[in-house]
Every structure is written in C-alpha cells, then in structure tokens.
Length: 257
Image (tube, rainbow, N blue to C red; front, side, top):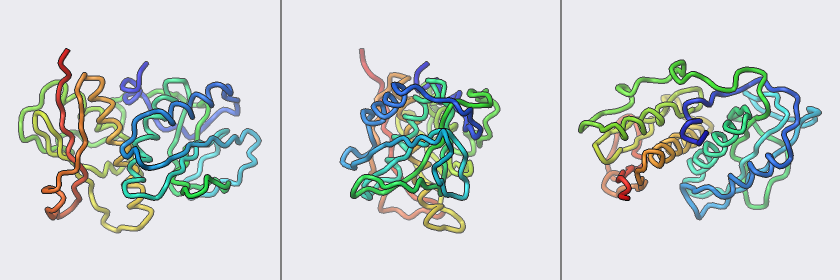
C-alpha cells in the first residue's frame, strides 16, 4: 500500500510490544526520510533512531509514551523549519505504517541525548510494533467535516474532493485541526488558526501540524495525477486576517500524458 492509502488507515498508537524491529527496516526508515521532498530544501535536517528496548532512556515530557524506539527529528532553526519538520515526518510515519509499525507524535517530549551540531531537537515520535489495532476505519476519525473547514468559491471536482478528504484526516496537536481553506476549482488558499491563549509551545505545535497537513495535500495531489505548487503570494501576505494567518496557496494542475 502507498502513502496515500496510509493516510486513511494510520492512527496514533500508544501501546507497543517489546519486540525488536529488524535492523534493515530501521535503516530503510532513515534512508526514506533523507530522500523525500521537503517544504524547504535549504534547511538541514537529520533523523535519528533511539532504541529503548530495556527502557533505559530517560524520556522527559508531559505527554511521553513508553516505546521500544523513538524517532528523533533535528533541524536547523530557520524560517519555516517547524512546518518543514511536520511535512517530512508525516511522509516518514505513513511509510512506517505501511511497514506494520505503530507511531505516535509526542509534543513537548525530549530525548536527552546530544544531537548534531548546529541543530535543534524539534519533535520525537514513539514507534514499534503495536499491541492494539494498527489500522483504523477512516469513518471513525474524529475530525471536523469539510463544510466547517472549507469555503467553496467554485464547484470542486472529484480530484479536488479526494485531496480535501485526505487533508481533513491530517493529525494535529490535541486534534485541533488548526487550518481553514478557501477552495477554487484549481487552487486552495491555506490559512492557519490563531490560538486563543498563545504560548511558544502551542505555536510550535501549530506550525508542525500545518506541515503535516500540507504533506497530506501533496501526497493526495500526486495520487490524483495533479501537480501541486505551494506558493506564498505577496498580496495575500500583506492582508490582515481576524482569526488566522495566511500560509500559502496550493496551485493545482492536472498532468497531461
């Protein structure tokens, strides 16, 4: 099964078997993460896997989950690095789901190990073979309906609807779904919602969540044989928005065979 199919099946797993993952699969995960497209190609990143079969790691965090392995994402601190982290990691987690591994994003959790020089530990993912069901029925996902997430300015075609269905299922911190869309037949204006009680940690998680959502958008567009170009329009950036902020415009164009 491909990444698009995994969008509809992946669920967060918080209970894991104490079972080793083959060394080759661990290497494949890192290789996959190193070679997928990024939102910002100029930002240096690094993925590392910390093994915790003997529960020796002093994992710290408000929402930590005990797991046999942790995937740790490091990045340079440049503009857009948080959204870039979410974008890359969601590709990786969907790949891992397809390989039979359960995963769980851990906000405000840290692995106290030295990271690469000049990089910041951005987010940690718990993973391993699940004790519970790996896949979900997408109908059971607790998400807002598209009519609450989107303003449709033009009639959406079948491909656009399929892209939006995938976007709707994107995971987010505390399941807040901090994004809204204005939809035309060939483009989507993407906005992020502001927090009522903003804090640095909540803003960071919103940015990471936005990157995750954009990964669903691009994966689904590719599945529909649609080229997607994400671009921040200067005119849109200059406008003021009451309850959110403009993120980007997704321009969609069907491939011609």
